Image (spheres, one colour):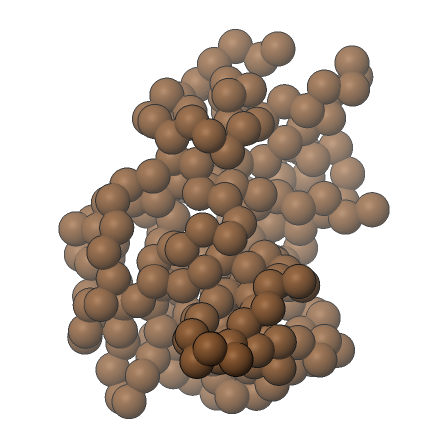
Length: 228
């Protein structure tokens, strides 16, 4: 069984995200959050008509053919499975790629006592970073337009394997020099930008089990805590 290593994540504030990604047009509006969960609307950068634009998207992709129904809305897709998926193949070939700003993400370790200990994972040299994602647009019978996205996952690095106790997957963290390629390059060029991030550039530490609930949202969630 593969373990998802990005069930929740933390958002930087809007000013910091715009400084990092320099969108040509900014339609988004958001504040820093510490407990982003699936089905929430999250900020994303995508390429549109020759420039980058900053928009809000639902986390959990609703394919175009679903006509707005979210009965099956995966929040992640493994990079090597994209072309095998009827949900993701079309958006991938149409270059419907985006970047999700993050300050860090949460992962859970199953302890010997069978307790799921949450960890917060961040980068050592970057207070925020971009994660590769793919998006699609679905229009309901009532003409409601829903833009939604799924995070792309890659093979975990040594740090993430140590947390998960087993093989799993980690979000595809992009290098800054790959932002533009990911947004506007060909599918072949974009796929070449997907790599496990170097483990030496990352940090993970245990945090409070309060993150096990989607209700709290405060800076304490991402601060170190004694493991249970």
